[in-house]
Image (cartoon, rainbow, N blue to C red; front, side, top):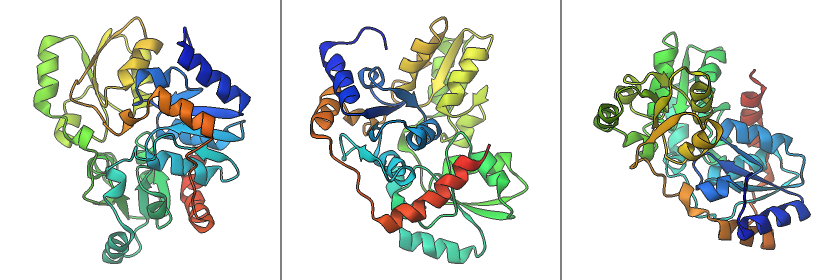
Length: 303
């Protein structure tokens, strides 16, 4: 973990004393990433939550991530330091509207991006992340699927799985949706040798400009294995901290406007307070947990 500040040291001490594993998403602020046991994308963190060797999970991410951890590991206490750290896209779909959409496309299984609430996952057939969305859709024995809630990611999946009809929900991640071709070109003009990596939550016109389209974990793998020495990072700027730590011999250019204010709501003092109080605790109705586990486990079962 490198050299930690006294506050970070206290957090690590408390986490060990209280049998807490700290999970942090790649978009968290650097000082929170630096005290986490595991830093990763939604897929990595979902698997680590399921397999966590400790009895308590402190989740530094937005609300749906902490909910998913609880659904996968209902026997564990899951702590979300700032409940107000919510994903706007996850709240762009409601049950009544989804049920109506399902009636409009009878027989089409619902693929729920993990960026959805626990209530919505309970009305879905299988979950996916940006890392495995294409694989999940390909795995389904159906000619048509409903993809919620990210229309950009759904459009990317459709482009990769043309043999199926993907019915898109009109949701989006405002951080990725706001990335424009003009922004990418402006950075490319400054750094012409840099390869362009973009997240599949971006608009198709941005995706079509990229040298590589992948999840945040995929960006780490690509940057590590590529012969290139310079990269434009087309996702939330928090990933650059981890890229610079884990691939220190290469240069990464962030998009300064690609900032998720909700991911940035959790700070070190929030983490310390949550450890001291062992809360706020994520609570889910047992029925919702049971209905969430099936689509999540189906996703995690895909190799």
